[in-house]
Length: 194
Image (cartoon, rainbow, N blue to C red; front, side):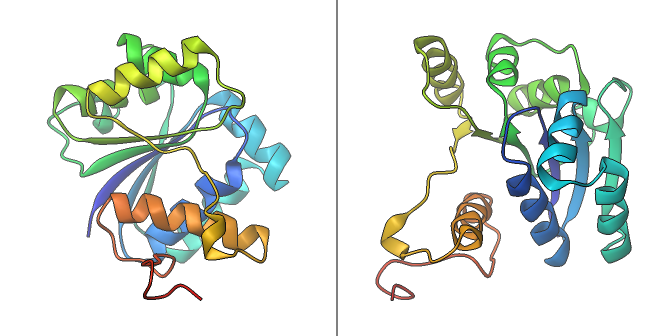
């Protein structure tokens, strides 16, 4: 079982976070969830459920989810002494990319990301913005040079997705593959390719 911090920020793409968390929990992993205020608002708009309803659903299916308030800088995930395997910010707003790239720690999300960097632990950002400005690209390059994985949810059309769900699952499979977690969405070219 892996211990994964999942952060949701105020970018579009709440369904990606929702499916990612559902999949981690269904595979028996431990999730430490932290959501920004804007992330909560975007989830409510895009998923048409409140964060309380979403979290209640996770808790009903698994006892391996722990929710932390984004203003609680005393939460366990704010310290390097709390051992985790990785952190995934999904979706990751460009504001969050900027703060993490500059070492800003004004919230639990950015502090936890800073901990991942200083402890040389796995940090994956799922940025959601298009088009990208030079500022966005510079910030992402800076993070990439520090070992952060930048993984925009790009559809792989060679897998011939038939539905939006296929496209979402493909992105989730790639993130899980990057975390070295076996999952039902992983596709090996030439083996499972239709």
